[in-house]
Amino acid sequence: MKKIAIIMGSDSDLPVVEKAAICLKEYGVPFEMRVMSAHRTPDAVREFVGSARENGYGAIIAAAGKAAHLAGAVAANTTLPVIGIPVKSSTLDGLDALLATVQMPSGMPVATVAIDGAQNAALLAIQILSVTEPELAEKLAASRAAAAAKIAAKDEEINKKYK
Image: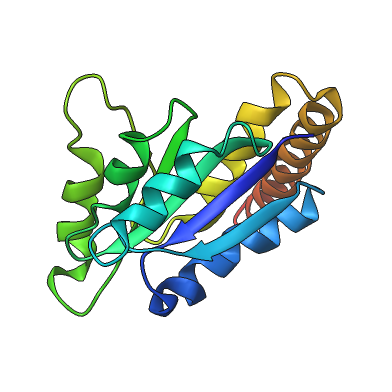
């Protein structure tokens, strides 16, 4: 199975990014977490993502706040799917990071999840891998079915209470 790379621009992003790691572990998807900055360590970013495909990665999750150029820097150096997580910072409530992550130029796609949306980033990476990994597709389907059953039970509970 291919691995997922999770790159964060700063270790201050770890509380957000950990949710992706937890999700990937739950699905049994191998991953590696790194701290690399688009601005402070651009050569390290370029080197890591430039060889990611050859090193067994199937997608890259990039999390950053404020200027949030990490996902774009990653996308510029690989043809693997890149998923950006805009991280909420102390300024502008993450809107700056959202706009920096989602507004990519034509030809440089970055799939962008919600501000601090690490779990959805992991699930999207899992869905990408599930194209060639049937066991992941089965786990995703089971998870969706369980979520639907939970909502149906809550609906029934509310319906009975207010009937």
